[in-house]
Length: 383
Image (cartoon, rainbow, N blue to C red; front, top):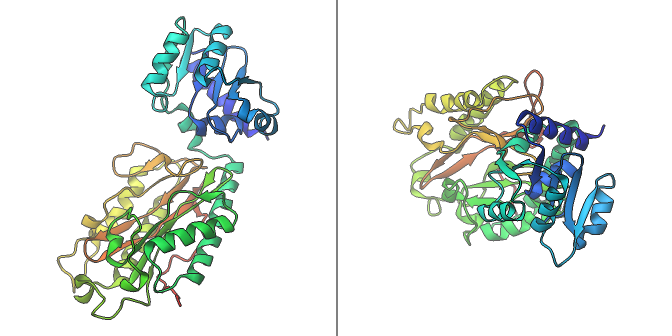
């Protein structure tokens, strides 16, 4: 099945519904989605009678290899991609052309209007992103493969990490192992936080060694043929458990297992709420309800709902964050074929954080985990 042609046909229907006779795609990720071309600095022009991939001589052979059925304009060094695209639009006779409102810059749009003064340019924001939210079977398999590669890299990382390794050392090592497992690169710079630094949801790596913390939060993913995965695991560390090494809140008894159990219960509640037709914000609410109801006799003042400080999840695919948005203020509605992350977490300053994140395929009657790593609490077996 020609999924690329299906995507282009769907975009054509969107243009018809908005009385547009053309569209200029400038975002590289959306050019890839519609054409299969994986280079950059190129545009895709939908014209009244045909379509064109507008690129330059650096990518001439790549365009032939990746897009053999796609007409292309290959510009020389004496012309910009924007100029070549405007020239094609002018020759096409297009009158009203859509542009990606949230992707094109103001400067590019003004230049287009000067280069093609007879054309009316209309912002069509999010049209392609809305298509991308529901994955075709080929995309699902690519994401599944990206998950497998990330998990292989993570297992190699766990087998080699040592007490003296710093957060920076571990980030560098994990990036290497994910590539060795088969990825082009990691899907984003990994987040690795030791001990109390886990209270920073997007902690940047420091020279804090693994031995200085009683737990380790690792957020990572793989980029494989453009499609990405996104996984988080929080592990107990066999180091940093003596009173002299623990931070204050750990010494007064915040129990890792008890808090981990609540985070896992929140994730399970969210997974149980997922099915086509459900509002994304209702899935977010299912997880928050678990945190709101959590009570601890030993810590009567601890309100975990106050420590879940971000949305529950997001779509994933060619970009690490894409539609749908799974958070309290989202108006998105879940559909079969969407692939999303479900990542509840708690972040307690001075103590640390726990996050469990998995990649999930929404099916016709519920959902299916694409990740296979255990979600149960585990202790890092570091040497």
